[in-house]
Length: 348
Ligand code: ADE
Image (cartoon, rainbow, N blue to C red):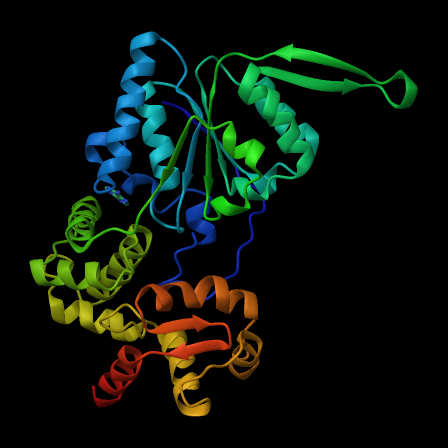
């Protein structure tokens, strides 16, 4: 399977790199994780339901000699949407053309992509909720009728010309399925959500990555990394690379134990629940300066010197998911679990 990538732009809010589930610039340009990605459905760990649904769709499409129906993958960052698109292309034996919506700024960007598509190719558009209207409207007939409607000329001489396209599969990925327009969403034949991974699957992923990186982890070390990665393989693999750095410096790549993982995690200020310094700062701010809340997002962001959007979209989701923070109509509130966690950390 060939991979063709055009990935310009796509800036996202940046924070502590180790625990941020967004790809780092290196990862989005496809370097460090490339060799670590599973290539086939059988190698892809977790997401059992997704694998079952897509496996059947692939088998059926191959049996009929048709292109796979268009697929929308949605869910939090770092769970393997790009990886799944690459796996699908491999299973189908076709080329995967990778791009992201912010790179399709001008009409000619999407036109260029579509006119170059080969029969049954897979076109992957990341962050598809960010497509502009023109690009989106060019996609509708392309997805539905395999037709590219081009406007030639200007003003009163403008005419529409239609180009026939070969059968192809569009795989769209988004962290915000709700931001997709319904006409676009309705054109996907398969709409699948990726879930956070459980401890067992994460341990299997960490162990697989350790083998690929040729480092030797004890079972306890593997468990520890899996427990701190916020249910997200991208974070698990990044933590493992930071652990490997410490092991390298100490000449211990072949004997990484829990103690070494603890050293690396504390170097990056990641605690046993997978919270980092920024998370704890937010919880401590609420606890110590606002009596546990409720406090409005803007007030909290100003007190922490953070941008409210970053706070809301990057810092808060994991704290909410962990039951450490609640959102009420009057603002954010700390939970008893968060108070216990802060006390525990102070005592440690
Ligand atoms: N590496 C990252 N995500 C993975 C997954 N779901 N399965 C196997 N290896 C992975």
